[in-house]
Length: 295
Image (cartoon, rainbow, N blue to C red; front, side, top):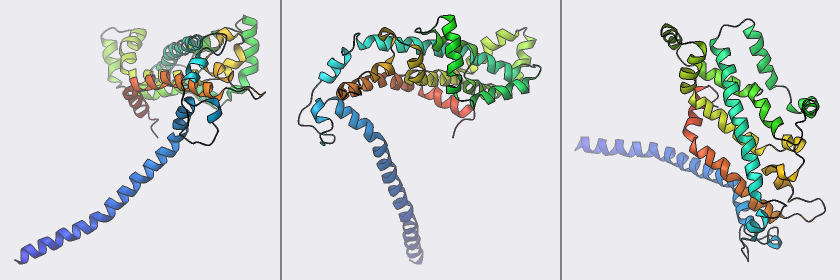
C-alpha cells in the first residue's frame, strides 16, 4: 500500500515537472509559427494582388477583393514588345552559362589550392580571399571599358565569359573547404594506380565533391537570375532583356505603372528558383554543412 502511494506521488511530481516544459514548448511553437507567418505574409499578399484588378490592389481590402481576375497574367505575358518567354530564355542562357563556368573554373582553382604544392600558394590564397572584400561596383568602370573594347556590350558575354576564369572567390573557398575533407589517402592510392593530376581531379575529386558543386550551381543560378545591376549595364536591346530588366519595365515614373502585371510576372519568375532549390535541396544542405559554412 505504501509503495502504491509513493509511486503515485512520484508520477504527480514528474507530471508537475513536465508541465513547464510542455508549456514552454507550446509557446515556442506559437512564436515560431507567428514569426513564419509574418515573414511569408508579403509573398501571400503578392499572390493575392496578382489576381486583383488594378483598382483593388491598394484599395485597403487586405488579402480579399470584391473581384478576381486572370488578366494580370495574360496581359502581363504579352505587355512588352516580346512575349515573356523571350525573357525567360535569356535569363536561362545567362544562368546556365554562369553555372557551367563557375563549376569548372572554381573547382579547378579549389583543387589546386587544396591539393597541389605550388610556390607562393599562401600568398595567392590570401589574395583570392581579399578579392571577396572588394566591392563589385568598384570594378564596373574598368570592366565596362574592357568589354566595350572587345565589342561585347549588348551581348551575354560579359555575364558568362568571366565565370570561366574563376572570378567568384566565394565558391572557390567553399570548394576548398569541401575538398580538404576528402581523405589524403586517396591521393596516394591514385598515384600508385598511375592516376595523373587531371585524372585524379576528374575521376575522384569531382564525383566526391558533388554536394559542393551543386551548392555552387544553386547559388550561382539564384544570384544570376536575380541580378539586375550587371544586366542593366550591359544589355540595351529589349530582345536581350532578362527577367529583372523586363519586370522593371512595368514600373513607370509617370504614374502609369502596371502593378498587377508586375506581381503576376514576379510570381512566375520565382518558379524556376523554387524548383531548382527543391530538386537539389539535399545536396545543397550536404554541401553547406560539409564545407564548414553551416551557421
